[in-house]
Every structure is written in C-alpha cells, then in structure tokens.
Image (cartoon, rainbow, N blue to C red):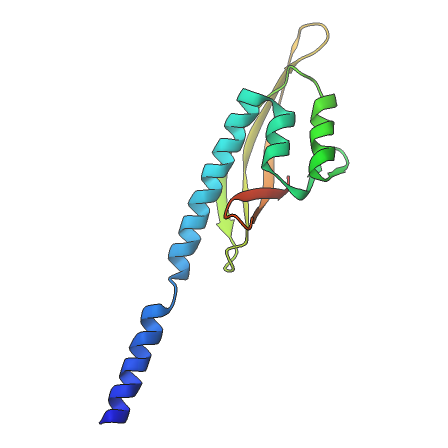
Length: 144
C-alpha cells in the first residue's frame, strides 16, 4: 500500500510541476504580436533607422535587394535611405518554436514615399520576420 501511495504521489507531483507548454507558447505569441505592433509604431514615430536598430538583435540580417548584416549596418542602411518613407505593416500570422526561443511572423506591408517630382510612390507586399527571445525576455528580430 505504501508503495502504491508513493507511486501515485510521485506521479501527481510530476504532473503538477510540468509546465503548460501550450500556455507558454500562447503567451510568447502574444508577446511577439505586441512587439511587432510596438516596432511598427516606433517606425512611424521615430523613423525607420531608429526603429529597425532598436528592434534588431545584434546579429540581425535584413534582405533589401541584398543582405544587410548587423544592427549597426541596419541603422546605417536606413539612415542613408529616403527620409520621406512611411512604412506600415500588420502580422497576419505568428508562431513560436516549442522551445519558446524563436518565433516568426508574416503579413502585409505598405511602403509609401514621394519621388523627386512629387509623385506618390506606393508599394505593398508580404513581409516575413524571424524573432529571437532575448535573455531579458524581450523579442528582437534576427531576420526581416
């Protein structure tokens, strides 16, 4: 009887201590969506160079007709870009690895600017961003 009680108690203790992975994943997805929205808001308020630099992991890479590697290079890329650009986006999907350390989003973006003659330029498409969970719990992109 003691052995059965021990087995049942041990089983209960293991089950009670097991983390709810699905709940963690749901929380991570919410965190990434929140970060994505903060990133877009920063791009509107601070400009692209500041926002992309702030939300980039130190090893981030962006693909803009060629690869731009590293947080500082990304900031410099956007500092040299057009100043009148307005970029908006919204994630349509988010997923997170079971480990909780990587996630990704994709959705639609709208790029707006004005050419040298004053004519509006508009471009839209699909974006894909890979997010990495940082040691402090925040999320930063490693690929965009």
